[in-house]
Image (cartoon, rainbow, N blue to C red; front, top):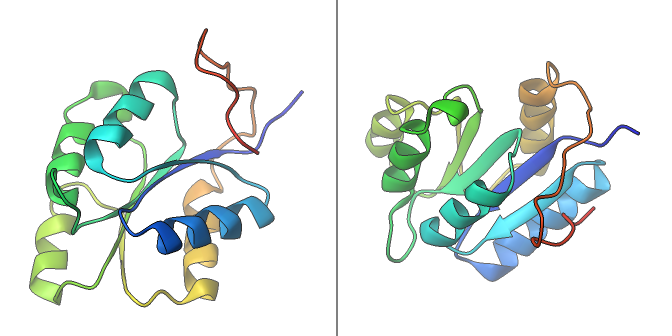
Length: 140
């Protein structure tokens, strides 16, 4: 049985997180979500997403620190990361140097983010993703 690629959405704003989750589920992707970087790192220990979408401005751990910690893990070195932010371009360029494939300014253009996620996930083979013991099912 084949499964859709898995996307991790890291966004502290609940409505924005819910919007992205619903948007990508409608597109046929599986989605897990985190409200901050610490929660996202915990999810990365349990799941292996094919793409990560993260905000830069979050309480606690910044999106930039989250990205740095993700990229420090060898098995996530090739996982595409998309940054969504309202920050100015200089901050975005700084984030891009840290291994980000794409940055998108808020408010998000829905058509563009869907198109870019499809492009970034095009090489991903739709494959079974085992659910780690005791972690429950990944939502579809």
